[in-house]
Amino acid sequence: MKNLVLLGALLICHAGAHADNSPWRGYLALGTSSGGDVLAKTQVTDRQTGETQRIDLRAGGALGSFTLGAEYRFTETMALRATGSYGREGSTQFEKGTFNSATQRYEGGHSYDGGLNFATLASEVTCLFSVTPALRIGLGVRQSVGELSGTGTLATLANTGSYSAAPGSVVELQYLFLNSRRQSGESEPAWGINLRMVRESFTNNGTEFNADHVGIGLIAYF
Image (cartoon, rainbow, N blue to C red; front, top):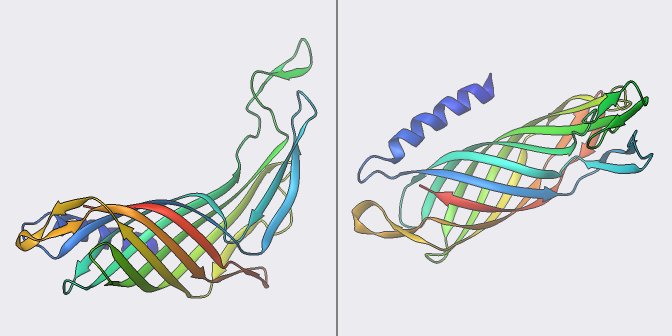
């Protein structure tokens, strides 16, 4: 419910970001991250070849993440940004092959005997300060939830299920490139890269996992 409310607020902010002379801007980011305690360290087996693939999932890792939000600029040097993000890592290659009843073998693509995924949803509020027109530093707070799910031989792996998180903190460094014309005829950067350091922890069935991580991504303002 909290994430639905956040999404609705972001959509409203996004609509306002397109008004002339508006202090609002839409925000989009694609990134990856690494860090945190091990949630699961195991392997799956290809039923065609017998070869194994290692799976090492960490509480702060994400092979890919998508972030959408809006930013309100108070002054030329200070702004407040609200975002919602989705991140995911793991293996989704369960039963991609086709079983041939004549040969009693799986054929066509990989056919691993299991899969494991860790997905997270997070909301953040960040205050950003412009050191230069291209360099910005942000400090923020974060609230996350997670879900570790398995298929096949990993369906009953320990630690699967829902993960709750204590409020976390974020430090972000942005370097912005391309300029676009914004309010009052001023020129502001529209896209760039960011480096993020996040401190948070997840809890599953009474067990706490450190989820501190470092991430890097491509960002865009619109």
